[in-house]
Image (cartoon, rainbow, N blue to C red; front, top):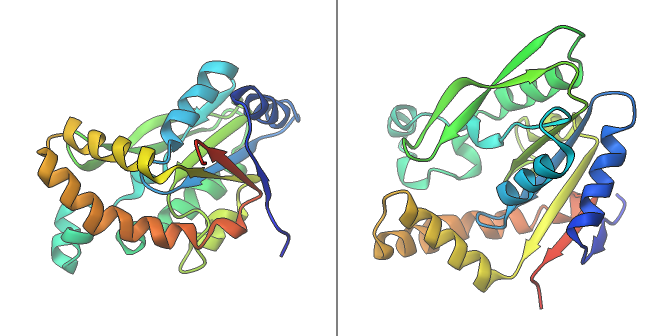
Length: 216
């Protein structure tokens, strides 16, 4: 296994790298990976802004959260967000479909609504002529279940390594924004999100690129 390239980089360098993939002449897929609160969605949105919505679309892994009802049925509600609480097979199948998308075909992907804490099916429209698909999530580099199949559909994976103090502050603020009290947010982050973060960190060596963001 090759060692990933590690770099402290500028946004422009990442834009240039994405631009090169988008200009290759065929559908390309980038996976952006990192711990909860690492900045995956922020980076994805910045790339869309830089390249244009006609050239890049974001399909988040979070759309494949199992429903709260299913998590309750399996006894997993308190660990929502763990690697076992996603439909990894469905996610891998969608990435393969996006990779092989035919001219004129429209593919619809699900989206996770944080205000509802549930996924909404067919919420992201992907046109066949969009050259670059970005997918972002926690477990794109996991080696269990269908995650390796999902990884195989991607041209590149970028792992975001973020200063932990900064990342935790972002993460707690996000939970508060979507309805938790500060105490509830901190409890959830330290009990659940940080367990997941430690697991996700063990997968970083499988990335093509490790990007340091605010790391001392």
